[in-house]
Image 1 (cartoon, rainbow, N blue to C red):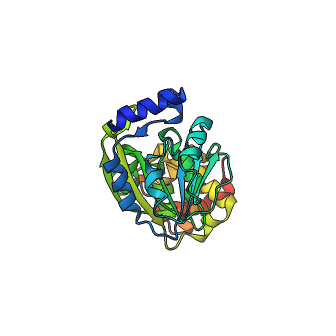
Image 2 (image 1 turned 60 degrees about the vertical axis):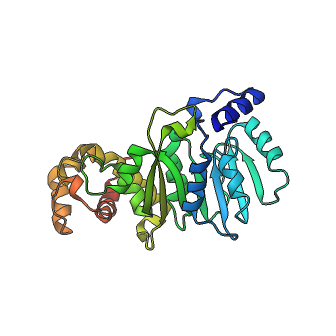
Image 3 (image 1 turned 135 degrees about the vertical axis):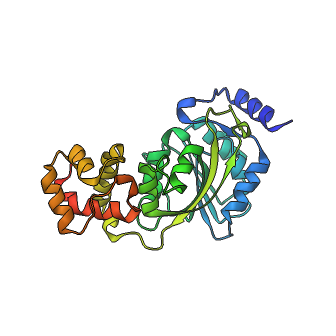
Length: 277
């Protein structure tokens, strides 16, 4: 029985129809699963967080190689199925809950085909913090392009800045959408990201981080404008006052898309007292 037929049979037995709004697309190609495991560079000491394990295709490989797996699954029927499937493994723990609402268990690595519908908030919760884990995760191809292409105007976006402020993109490879059932309507990419060696200390205070994330979201719609115009449009401040602050701090009034990642952090420091939430 091939991977798709097997998944269809299990779903029928569980009386579950995949929910598009939960990003329930199940990996059916075990060669891709093996590739993900290789990219994860697992060790016997690793503690792994798997988000949305579904029917446990990746989990089958993980349990054999690591110290502990925390699998967070929102669908209770899958939790029951996985609890039975891995009942003989002491290193496997299933957590029934919404990954965006639960307290995250401590882990070294996140290895997951993550639900595409919550990619942005999920990245923020799991990785945008002090001492984040490594990530080996499957995301939409266009998101991967934005994460990796920092100097390409078309792909330069909010997620380019925010993720690269906390994490360092390491590698990526594309995965055919036909490796999943139901077939998603987007192309996919496996990305590997690791914590930055030196996260800017400004971002390690929660209030500063929250402002920075909102600040970036607020000015990026104006990425083709210069800094002063973008900040005037977002913050509603007087343009001359903005220019005075920029000149005082030796900030050139360049186009937003031409800035480096660190420039956005420095800008948010300068304008945090003018914050618009």
